[in-house]
Every structure is written in C-alpha cells, then in structure tokens.
Image 1 (tube, protein in one colour):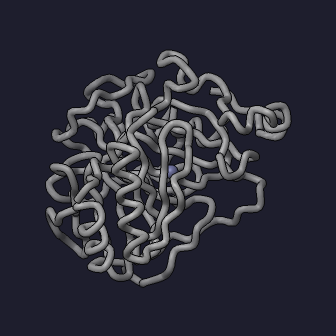
Image 2 (tube, rainbow, N blue to C red; image 1 turned 30 degrees about the vertical axis):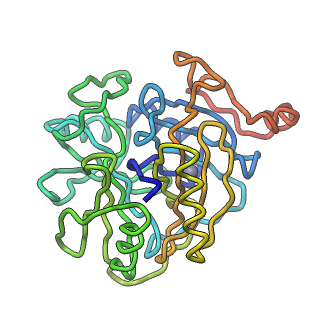
Length: 313
Ligand code: ZN
C-alpha cells in the first residue's frame, strides 16, 4: 500500500445551541477550544474545534451548531457513528461523574468493555459521549480549570459505528485503511490500526433493530481518519476511484486537507492530513480566541459576524 492510516483524526457532530456546546466542551469536558471558525460549506454556521493544547489529530471533537437554522433533529441508527468515546486516566471516573453532574448532566456507568470501565453522558444536543478509563493513553492532556493530569481527557479513545452489516464495514476498513480485528463481545468488534490503542480504535456494533440513521441535530456527521501526507491522500483517492468508489476532490480545510467518501454501511468517512495544523492563523497561546475565517470568506467577515449568534467562553 502506498498510503497508510495513522489513526483517528477528528469526529464532527451537528449540534443545537452554540453557547451550550461551548459550555459542554470547554467547561464540562475540559477540552481546549483550538479554533472558532465557520462551516466552510455554510458560512452562516460556526465550526468549533476542541482538542488538546495544539489540536493534535486524534484529540479533535468538532461541532456545527445549527440552532434555528431549520435542521431537524437526527435519528440515531445504522450507518452512523452513534457514540464518541474519549479516554481519561484510570481511576478518574468518580471525579468525572461528580464533575458532569455538577454541570447538570445525566451521567451513568456503562458496562465494562474489553477490560476498561467507562461512563456515558448525553451532551446538550443528545449526542452520546463516553469517557473510557484507561492506562493505555500516554498523550499529554490539556489541563482545564479543575482538572489535573490524573483526570483530564487525553483525546479520542474510539468511535462506535452502528452497522446493519458489520462484516461489510470491517472488510472495507481492512482493505482501505488497514484496520485489523482486535477483540469481540456482545455484537461488537473492536478494530484498530497502526498498533491500536486510544485514538487508533473503532468499535463496529451490530445494529439491534436495523433502523437507519438520519443525519441532523444531535448526531455525528462524519468521522475522519488521519493520513501522513498529501501524496498519500492522493494515492488513496486514486485507488478508491479506480475501484469505482465515489470520493470528493481534495478539499482545503485550512488546518488540514480532506477527502470524503461513504463506507458501504453509509457512514461518511473523511481522510484528513496531519498538516498544516491550527497554528496557521493564530499562535499557540491564542488558539480559539478569535473568529478565524478561511481566506476566501474574509471579504464577507462583516456579514458573517453580524449573523452568527454571540457567544462567550
Ligand atoms: Zn471533518
């Protein structure tokens, strides 16, 4: 293979209220807002990126807050990322339950899975977020107020793909991304890439009722995998096209370059480059402070700023 997938890059969700989303991501989960920009495909909507200090691929959770813009609530189901899991240090779950409840969130224990305990919480838009306690994540956490290195989120642990035909999705991920099966329980197959572990794992879950997912508020829009270079991305794109798989041209997302295509079960996959990263338009200590627009939208800045809901954080 002339290209290789390094792990997860980011997960992007459609959410409701912008301020509620910031309060959840920054204050409750303690992630760093590393970029405040607009949806490059719809400049009337924010695009928030949360992650570690520098917004490293594999730590990134991103949202489009669509409140009052006519997007209906989505439906969770087959052909969708139904749960996004973040890793936290082993032994921190009691502290997390307390913290999340103090933020008015409903948090419950999830059944232990593959030797790791976790809790599950719904964000203000109804997205399912898990915190998985693990000793396997050596990434350096961003330390928000009230959190220390023994508690703070380290990054994305894994995502759960709910699928009507899990075998077909696994075969696709194996063929194109090099994922291998790692473990299995209760209709769930954990697959991993590039050595596995947090940030490099995906759970493929058999859909219980087979109900199809519908994209909308409160659902994950897509999951992105990380690829090392633009050259590898082009090689993957060419290979997909040769097999008759529809894939977008390379899209400039300012902070990375992306291609998009659907896996056979319907989940929208993105493959995004590691570079150039979030310091292209703000220094490290200022990440997330200003409203950043792609160069082609600067001409519309006054209009954009007038129409976006005001937020504080
Ligand atoms: Zn994306």
